[in-house]
Length: 245
Length: 245
Image 1 (cartoon, rainbow over the protein chains, first blue to last red):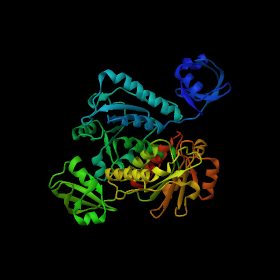
Image 2: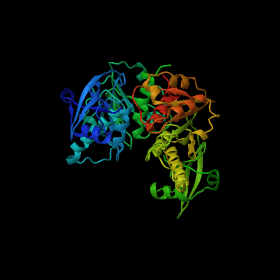
Image 3: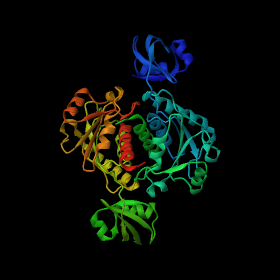
Image 4: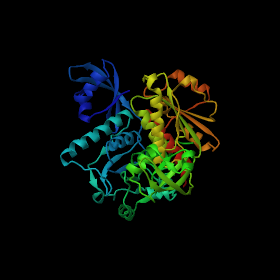
């Protein structure tokens, strides 16, 4: 069943307009009595079409749908800004796999040039990708994509577990820091994960992050590309926290 | 350091030609004494340039490099043929994350039409993607991408653990079958993983696979898209088998 995130005002109005109405009318070809889900973060409601109008859809709420689709711990990704459209893939798949928040970070080896004039429209696009992925994976919340920052400007003080994915750590055969950290995590923890861009993390950045309390973790023997690291991390977290024997 | 897979004959000849020579000469801008890795499955050798010729590179082997970059258990993916270029992403990221073999499968809800004339060139392209991803992630072997088959024609008899990722299982809250199966796996096991195409697996296919000994597993509460499932599975396997507390 299709899910759409809307505002509380829209829910109360009983009328959908704009893109959601367009989707229901023209993509789903919705008819009276057809049902769909409406997300008002973090709640979800089953809704039913009452009337299909020219550019609007009148609906009624059938009932609230319970169910938690969120990882039990808050996980924020600080992603070294990568080339091309990799950040879009990271947002899309990271959202499916349960990420809480995404911070694109300019790091020493990020080679991307940010066009100041297109910064806002880019951020809007990123948040739209997160919203669509959250709808498709039935998330309770839409992970927010924050504005681009330089590493030195990031405030990591709100995080209780700080994980740095560093290629050299993996190459040196480190295999226990990640598992130790996430098996010990509690639902009140907030986890920050830093992943470098394609060229990796510069040694001075590693030292800086270590001084802030980050632990360097290895994620097995194979060298992962920048965009694959967060998929590994989130999948492992789900496996550890959400599955049982 | 860059790795290239070559044949045993090429290793013994001491001369690289064709695409590898082109890469070393024109992309890496290799000079005499520059070093690189040569993979002759499953071995890896450190090599050094002796002479850069017009279309060939003369090299000598410095030493064998030991190190195992493979998952400890053989894992074969049987992927319901998806739309667009998703299979290429699955091959690329699946290889990075340690897959052993990939079988594209035509399932009831695969909506792709396979052009018989382009079948061979497509398969060649898939195997090239696997080779490049294996080189980048320092794999010891190149996962082979097998020819496209119909589900009914697949011989699953060689597999000792058979995992079926079925959306309805996840929706019903099943959370223990996957972890049970992979924590019990031994290095002599061979694991088959079946993932449906975008439209999912048809009920009659589920019944058929169950009759062959497949177990239905849920992978947490979020609905994963077809291309994300194998990333989750391989990451969780690495986390379980390759990381320790």
